[in-house]
Every structure is written in structure tokens, then in C-alpha cells.
Length: 141
Image (cartoon, rainbow, N blue to C red):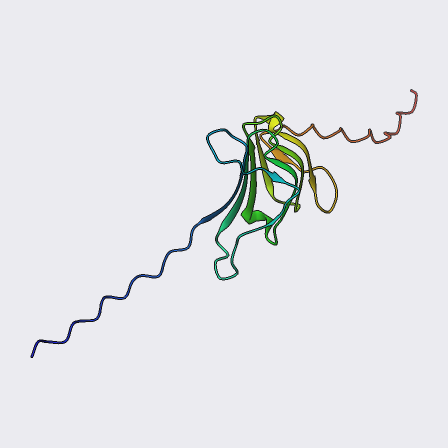
């Protein structure tokens, strides 16, 4: 009798993606995927905390009135590009890095818990100098 067929080798588990992408685009060479008044959360599954989530907004008004929340903002990024503006009225968790290429790609980017978001690629205004401390005037000679 023929020998029994050997079982197939176990297939390796699929390796998780290192990046998760949420793509919003109004560019001509991509299907229309404009994100208007959308709420997004990071794509990081709890069992793969190493995955980073990118919200990519390409083309004018590709992300309009969009909220992007992340439990771990250090693993979340926003990229606004190829539009003036690509991101308009964007609200993000404090700590998410927002990259604007060019600078005019971002308009009205805020933190969900209040305040204007810091933007990479956009120079922040220099800090205001501290008020002069009152120094005792030297006694007249």
C-alpha cells in the first residue's frame, strides 16, 4: 500500500502590517475618497501595539471636518499634502504628529481637548520672551 501523504507544512502566521493607513483623497489619479465630517480612530489592534496608524489626506479638501482619536497618540500620524488646504477643520488627540506639505496644506488643526495643534513642517511662532524681572536699581553714588 502507498505510504500515507505527509501533512502539509504549517503555514507561517501572517505578519501584521507595521502601518495602518486611512486614506482620504481628492486627487484625479485616485478614486474619489473624500473624507467629510468623519470620525476615525486608530487601527491598532490591542494584540499588535507596534502598529502605527496614518491618516493620509491628499488633495484639496480631502479631509474636511475630520476627527482622529488615538489612545496612544505617539503611534498616530496625520499627513496633509497636495492641496491648499488638504486638511480643513481637523481635530486630533493631543500628541498626534500632523505633517503639512506644504504648510498651506493645513488650515484650522486643533486638539480635541482644546488648543491649536502643533504642526510639523510648519514653523511654530517663537516663544514670547519672559517679562523682565524687576531688578533693583543700583543706589546712586
